[in-house]
Every structure is written in C-alpha cells, then in structure tokens.
Image (cartoon, rainbow, N blue to C red; front, side, top):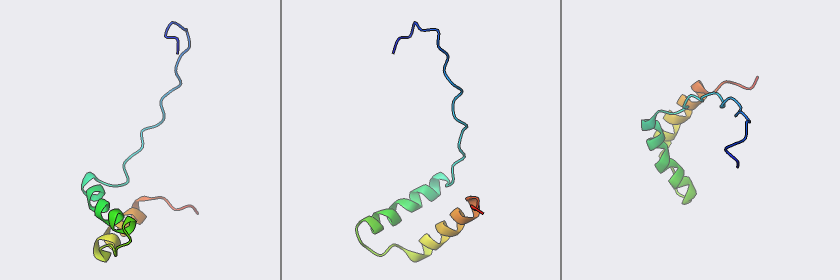
Length: 61
C-alpha cells in the first residue's frame, strides 16, 4: 500500500446496531459453550434470548 497515492477511501460501511446488549451477549456464551460441548443448554435462558432476538431481527417476508 502506497500512502503517497492520491486515491480516496470509500465511505465506511454504515454502523450496525447491536442485536444483543452486552449483558445478553454474556448470557449467550454459556449456552453456546453447552451446545459446543454436546450438553443441554439452559432452556429458560435460551427461550428468553431467542424471544428477544426474534423481536429485534426484521422478518424476511
């Protein structure tokens, strides 16, 4: 990369809003680890996070 070139950078991509709060992301980690390890994830926490994700992600219709 030559910094002396007169090229301009493209506009940066639009900022994406987080789908999860930081606390929710921390709650998700043990669930993902349980799935990775072939264990049963906590159903109550999984249901809570799934409902919140479903409410925030636009439908594809």
